[in-house]
Length: 495
Image (tube, rainbow, N blue to C red; front, side):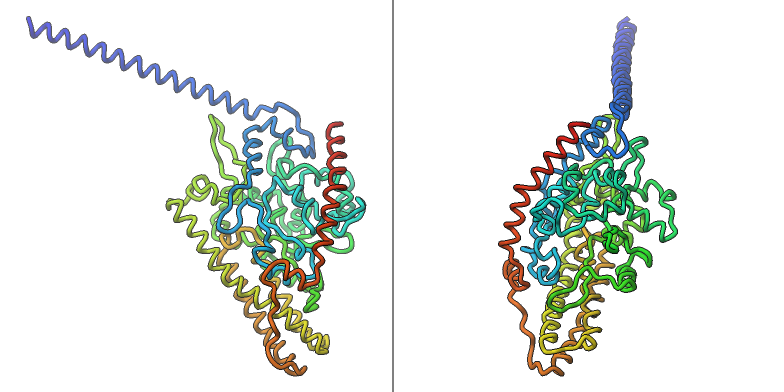
C-alpha cells in the first residue's frame, strides 16, 4: 500500500511540474510573440513617412521627422570631444602644430589659417570663420569664388537648381552667404522620394562621364563610398568661371592627376619665394582609399565611418559620422577579432611611420623654396630655373597629396609611403641642381634655414600681416554674417 501511495504522489508531483513548465513556456512564448509584434510595429512606424519631403529640401530636421533614429544619431556629430593621437573631431590649429606649412603654402590662402575640420555639423560655421574666405567688408565681394561653397551644405543643390550650375560657380563667394546656411546632411546623399543614395554634386557625375563610366551601374555598396567621394576628392576650379572639376581623366593616382594638370599648364598659385607654379592638393580621400586593402576587399566608407546599428526592431545606418577609432566595436571589430588596444595601436604605428618621413620631406621642401629664392636673387635665368621649378612643383604636389588626405596613413599606408619616397627623391635631385646653380652664380656655403619655429615667425617670414587680416575677419563675423543668418531665417520661416 505504501508503494502504491508513493507512486501516486510521485505522479501527482510530476504532473504539477509539467504543468508549471508548460505555463512557463507559454508565458515565455507570449513574451516573445509580444516582443516580435512590438518590434515589427516599431519597424513599420520607423519607415512610415510623417511628412512629405520635397525635392531639394535642405533642412535636416524636416527629414528627421520621417527618420528620427538617423537624425538623432546625426546630431551627435556636434560632439567635438573625441581626439585621437592624430586629429579626431576636436578643433586643431594645424599651422600651430606644423609651422612649416606656412612656408610651403606661402602666397596661398592656406598660409593664413588652416584648421583640422571638426566635422560635417560645423561646415558652414567653419567656412564663415576661416581667414581663407572671411573678411570682405561688402557682401557682394570677396576673395574666393562661390565654388568654395559646393560641399558645405545641402542648400547648394537647391541654389544650383535655381540659378544653374555654371552661374553658381561663376559668382562671388559672399553673394551666396544668405543662401547657404543649413549644415551638411540628408539631402546631400539621399533621394527624398525613395531614400536611395544619389550623387547631388555635378563634378563627380561629369568626371564619370568623361571616363566613360555610368554612375547608374554602381552597386549600393559602391554608392556607400561614392556619395562621400562627391566631396572627399581632389578637385580644382577650371577656367575663368571657376568650374569645379575632378582631374580624373587620366586616372586616380597622384602621378596621373599631375600629368593632367601639367597638360593644361594649370597652377593654383605661384610661390613667392621659389616662383614655382604650384599645385594645391585638396583632400584626395577617395583616390587614396581606392588604393588600399579595404577598398580592394569591398569595404565602403560607410562600413567604418557610419556602421550599422540596431534599436528595437530597427536596423539602420549610424549617421554619427566619425573616426572609427571612437567606435572600434561597431567598425573595426565587426571584421577583426583583435582587442581594441591592439587595433588602435596598429593605426597609430602606421601614422607615426608615415609622419616621420613626411616631416623630413617638409624640411627638404622648405629648403628648396629658400634656396630657389636665393638663386633668383643672384640673377638666375628662367631657363636655368625651369627644371628646378618643375621639381619643386612635383615634389610638393606629392607631399600635399599625402598630407591633405584624411586618414590616408590608415586607408593606404603603402601608397602614401611610396608617394613620400618618390617626393623625397625628386626634391633631393632638385636641390642638387640648385646647389650647382648657386655655385655657378658665386654663392659659397649653405643657404641658411629660416627661423620658422612658430606659426607667428613663419607668417612674418613670408610677409603676412596677420593683425590686419584678423581685424578684417572680426569685422566680417560681427557685421556681415549676422545679416546673412537673419535673412536666411526669414526665408525659411516663409517656407
